[in-house]
Length: 409
Ligand code: ZN
Image 1: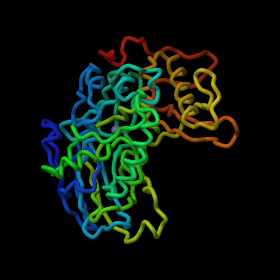
Image 2: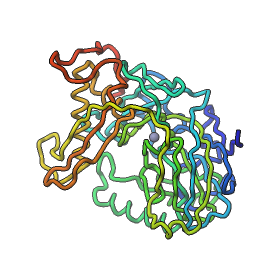
Image 3: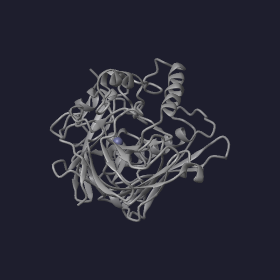
Image 4: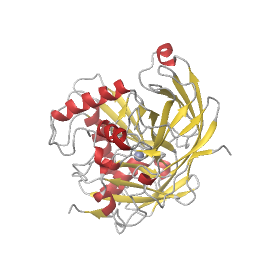
């Protein structure tokens, strides 16, 4: 096996590991060096650094301090990579750590992060998913199991100083348009919980004060949460600093398009087997602004779907102009209402849409005034037939099992 360049000890806090960081900043020191053509293994914490536990309470999802996330492994110095190059990253394989064969999915409280459907599911809830080789199922969501489409939710290179300044300026200005919104419009830098890897002293203090939070996807990739960026993919990242500074984390065993529950997919600790290469001046040569990638030749083989449509008319009947966010929300709500007819709670149905290999598509964005979004629900992941028929839906679940819920304190 290739060398493991970054190791994690799940019994210890990620703050004790100087090969981990939770902010983006060009001055975070590189923790390992590779050269083009090298293969290597990187271990990662789950995105919360082990805060969420394998139990039947959602108190941890309710109480988590979201200024601590995401805990990333890196940055890795790629010898010879320079600003303007494209970094090629082959994701040769990904797996769970043998001591941690489980993952979690949750809904944050509306007061602490929220989620895509936070108006409908405002309280903290959690489901635990056990990993059985390439398959998963949950004691909190009966009647469903599926193969993993395992991927890093978050991967990218360190920003340059000027790119970081651009991010901070535009996001700070955006927050100022509605500073008291719950959940907030964006997250500004926050020094108190910043983990800047090996930085110490005044340099650490200065960088922590301006280090970008890891929540949004940005030009460098970052927290894109793309389920199809799975093991077997080849990604091309813009390089902004000498040595690239590749970092990653937030591994997902599986996720539906949109990662709609926000906490999140099936979140897990694990490892990645990677290989890197460099295309000199690739950014200009190919006109790259954001990363591009080639997906894996291997994916779970679900061919049959029940597809839910949604349009840009919201829950209150209000018209929105070609708004795909509203349209996808309606498609998701339509799927949840449908699954409830088979005995699922709304929370269980929401959890299925966040974790299973559900596809989301933008189907139409020109037919004024309504955008149309579609949600593809794979029918083969269920233990029973979910297709409509003359007899109507059969309640396959008795409602005795549900997701743990923790009301706000
Ligand atoms: Zn995640």
